Amino acid sequence: MRIVLQRVARASVSVDGEVVGKIDRGVLLLVGFAKPDDEATLSHLSRKVLHLRIFPDEAGKMNRSLLELGGDILAVSQFTLCGNTRKGRRPSFERAALPEVARTLFEAFVAQLKDSNLNVETGCFGADMQVELLNDGPVTFVLDSPEPKTP
Image (tube, rainbow, N blue to C red; front, side, top):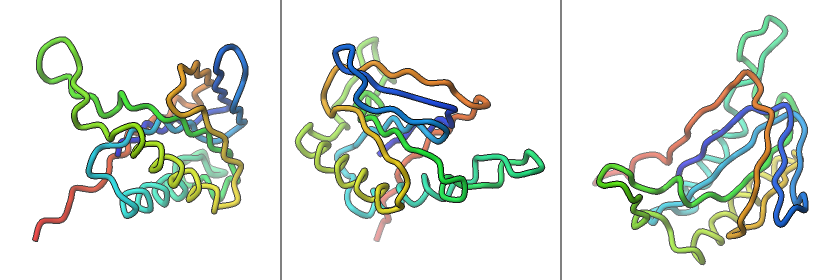
C-alpha cells in the first residue's frame, strides 16, 4: 500500500464535471493498493494518517496531528501508485492489487478513517477523476506499508 499524503487548505475531486468529494483544511490522500496488502496494512496506515504530526502548533512547528486539528480527509484511490517504472518506458502494474480486491481494501480503509469521526470524503473508485487541491506548505509525504515480517 502506498499513500501520497498532501496537507491541503482545500481539495476536491470531480467526475464528469460534477464534484463528488470536497474538503477544507486537512489532507488529500492518493491511495494505491498492492497484492500483499491486508487488514493489518490498512490499520497501520490509517493510524499513521490520523496521528502523523504534520500541522503547525502555536510556534509554527509541525507538532499537531489531523485528529488534534479536527481536519478533513479526501481519499482518492489511485492504482498507478503501485506502478513499477524501473525498466523500460511503460509502467508495469503487476504489483497492483486486482480492481475487485483494491475496491474492498479502499472501502475498508475509508471505514477505518471514518471511525475517527472526522469528515471523510472520497472520489469514485475506478472512475476517471479530476483532483484539485491547494497544497498547504507545500507539505507532502509518501507513506508505504511496512515490510512483511520474515519468520
